[in-house]
Image (cartoon, rainbow, N blue to C red; front, side, top):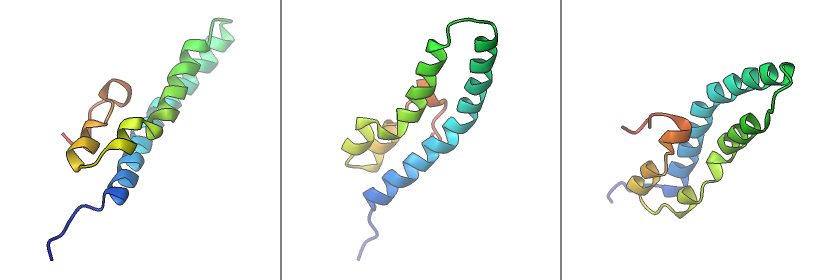
Length: 86
C-alpha cells in the first residue's frame, strides 16, 4: 500500500507553522502598540495587523486546499514572511 498524504494532519501542521511564524510578529506589534498608545497616536493600524495575524490560521485557502502544493501555496508571505516550504 503506498503512503499517502493525510491532508487533515497536513493542514494542522500548516496551522502550527503559521502560529510559530506569527508569534514573534505579534510580540513586536505588542511593543509597537504600547509605544503608539503612550504617544497618544492612533493604534488602529497596529490592531488591524494583529488581527490579520490571528486570522491567518482560518484563511479560506487552507480549508479549500486539496493537495500539498495547494496547502503550501496558502502561505501568506506578505503577512507571515518567507515560507517554511521553500
